Length: 183
Image (tube, rainbow, N blue to C red; front, side):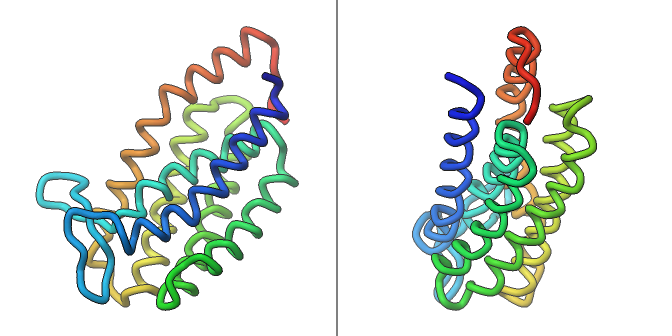
């Protein structure tokens, strides 16, 4: 598979993670709060809205889209993703979802871009960490007027980022072995 095709697959995954996260918030969880989110445990005694899993993955996929397709593609994907996020979010979450997506993915881009050529795994980890904190703060504040689930949001997204790091390390090694340069 060539790098362009890989990039398109990452782009597809990035795009699908947005509606899936919004759907999960209202439909998947061990507990669903009336007029609120469905929650999952992310650590002993710590709950988070279930969509955090897909948002953590979206942050990593955004980095991979940029690596394979370039800055123009990922900038367009962020704008389209914010619009899509607003379109597929439950009505009460439209502004929160779109704003959190736009701001967090932009923060991710700003951290990832200068680091990725030299230290890919560190770039993905650092940019995702910044992005997931921005996403959590903006989403929770705008959606619920509360930061009650902040720790859970950060942990849930962080678990997905950490789970992706072995793949990122493998990808970097493979790219170096075959002489593939980032877009």
